[in-house]
Image 1 (cartoon, helix red, strand yellow):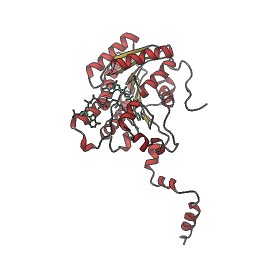
Image 2 (cartoon, protein in one colour; image 1 turned 90 degrees about the vertical axis):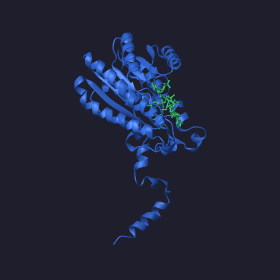
Image 3 (cartoon, helix red, strand yellow; image 1 turned 60 degrees about the vertical axis):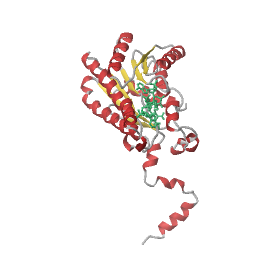
Image 4 (cartoon, helix red, strand yellow; image 1 turned 30 degrees about the horizontal axis):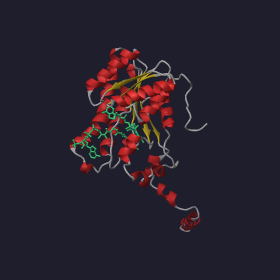
Length: 292
Ligand code: HXC
Ligand code: NAP
């Protein structure tokens, strides 16, 4: 067994219908693939119709599952309401919403126009709000229970991060929404959880966060105590567990999957890792000499 293998028992999501925003690429596509393999029907959405149509066709052939591709810009509530309607028309009802769609790029904040800042907030925070509100209201009105919302955030949702300030601001809001609704809407039979991934290479993120030769200059694996980036299947395993009935008692939680990356940046003396083994004898002697 290793971490790239599939974790859940077969049919763990059989009979479930799952909506994955941004499901046509990257981590959304990886989660969609595994959800289909576990027996779910999946609705994928994004702004790019051709992309989601191609992904839907590819994954139906690959997994034998059923995929509906619905173009939807999560910034627009009317489009999200149409997503709810089309998903229900095709599959009868929706059980799980994965708020995965995001926009991001690196920039010194003073270079951002007001509209650039808004664009990220609108996709990440307002988009997650739009989907959560539209699906949540629908489930409440229909008196449907046992529903799950999974939000994809980042570890800088609570640490903050320079150079991706709109994204950090928006993801922090999504985390607050996750924890707030986990309590408020539990009475309607909904669970809310989040995943905070560390670096998982995807084209969407890497083109915007490590353009050009920044990929070579800033090897993100070096920031991770486990000295590697994440594998897509690891994240898909965690997501499948969190949306399945096996996690029925987990509510309002954010699970970090980053190989210890953010904690390495946080611990005051973690920089002592750079001290060579042979120096520790001398340092210990110096400290002991201070006794008394
Ligand atoms: C400064 C920029 C900019 C840049 C765009 N803008 N790129 N400003 N630096 N590099 C400005 C534009 O000039 C414009 O402002 C405003 O932002 C909106 O730009 P548009 O191109 O019109 O927006 P849109 O077509 O809606 O595209 C949204 C986008 C784009 C976010 C800019 O990159 C995109 O489509 N991204 C989707 C995929 C994505 O980002 N994936 C990565 C997720 S990774 P003005 O004032 O000129 O009108 C992630 C977490 C990673 O979220 C954590 C990793 C560890
Ligand atoms: P990605 O492939 O770029 O995924 C983002 C998806 O969001 C795309 O499919 C994009 O599709 C969609 N999207 C963007 N704007 C949208 C909008 N307005 N309406 C609907 N869909 C929209 O990047 P990724 O790395 O897989 O990111 C997936 C999630 O993981 C994001 O929430 C991201 O913040 C999170 N994350 C990633 C990493 C990482 O290392 N990769 C780390 C931490 C967190 P269209 O362009 O076709 O609309």
